[in-house]
Image 1: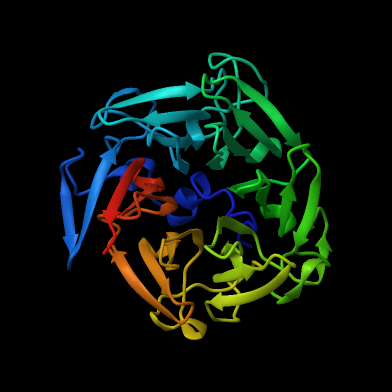
Image 2: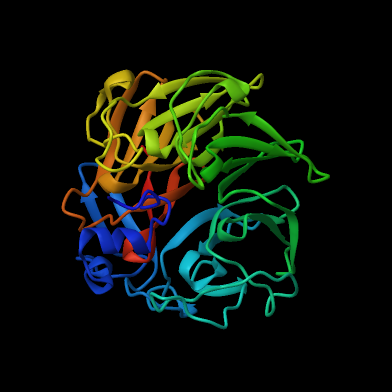
Length: 369
């Protein structure tokens, strides 16, 4: 039987399941560098940073190395912040340089990757364990979903790290409202929670799940509050009307949560399960939102005109949901040449979609039309 956690352990487990070596996954047909571009129609793909090799190296954009980069956000200066998941660090990309903001690791895991840990402190002493999604507030503080530690960590502008809250079940992503409220996808509890400025946690949506041993099985149900169900929700974003848009990854759907906790399905279809798992089978289909197909979508980002961009990770594609009615493909890489697992996204200056491309160990971007 396939490991039930095969999606959640998205970096390493995907290599094992695919039978590909890490070197094969890291190989890319692109020459790395901020000026190197590939085109699909009118859409231009650009590699912003990363050599394409797995590793840890600061410095020049084209020569820097990452290890399964996951989360992404912009700070108040417009710099790109990255959760470098398997290096257990937070990295920063400026116009011409990659640096480490915070994080250190002293041990290796069974796969030979950095194992991480859990400690607060200055930039040279803080430790994370599989940091995933992140968001930056109006003061420049970064909030990190420190997934394997079950915590939300806060990193100040000088790199000092503190624990904002803990006790969550593998949080994956964060969205921050104007009032400072954090909205979190608590992935392995299959629910959406909010955390106020005092650190109090409240369930917004998701509940009533069945357990199988120590494992909580997800579900698919629209409705309100804890009467609704998700299946390993991962990415989350605030829409222009204040609703939450959620990548319901294990259900292959995009969901919407309004301010009163009402959950609806915006896009995605398919009811068959992958053999040996509780995940819906993925697919690839553009068109009417209710008939569209995705393959483990990992993140969503909302444009200024309300378009919802989707990191369709296992399809190696960036998709778009227009007016909550129709799904189109913005950029795709069916042979895994240009895109290798686009994971999380951020929109810069309303015209550039920047994203982590996890299995190429790079950060890339496309210009929005």
